[in-house]
Image 1 (cartoon, helix red, strand yellow):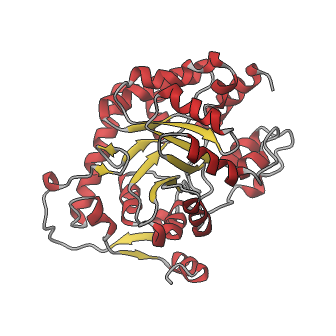
Image 2: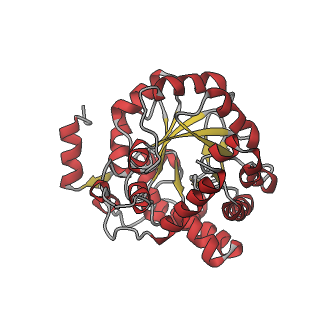
Length: 346
């Protein structure tokens, strides 16, 4: 594929993603908190900072992988980097493959580090990229961690996508041994299973982003790019973010779990933390904010989002992330059925 076609594909991804609508009801609506009328803490007693073995985050919210690889997406990444710098949020770039193939595209990614020199930044590659190129991706952004995205359904629907996956796990193992920053294995919206997380742990992965169904839908995006648009029947493929967090529940003492995929509001984010996530990523909400309302209003959006998370934490009497992990939740019958059929309560 030519560089110009790759740039066009990156722009197409953003345009189609921004045109998608969130479902009105999701699995987040099947998770409820028990209300206790008189809180025992005040809002200013809530501390939602995240202290992880390899880096710390001022809030359990991060700007998740989106884009890069074209002139337009360079502008988007620069705006998002300003938002991250002004709010203290961690930020991930989209797949850096374009820059690894063509050094002229590097500026659409390293603009994030130039704009946000002291921030927490995650670089991003696919599971098939050679380990030496994964190391280059980290060096390109002086990244604090490397997201390795796994996206087999997207690749299979993509007209020009990958058709070989049997080497991914071995390649992941080599990447872990080659790069000198933490590796975060990240789904792109199809969720994760308990079995996969166990397998990843065995090859040395200490961070996963379960990124479940419910947000940007890459089956739909790639199906729109197909001439016949004939694979829409896969639009609901995969586990939701809630189901993926339930899958990870008994492994959260072994692997640090991040959650993303379909997070619509601060309540959804708090539910992710209550189900065991250490931090919550969002992509399209930040993209829509910065493209529609500009940087200043996006900064206000982030600050208000975190403030509302603190208010909800008060409502469940949780003064920090650890307390949120132990908050009681009530699950509807479909989620209970998932737990029972998958043997997740054993």
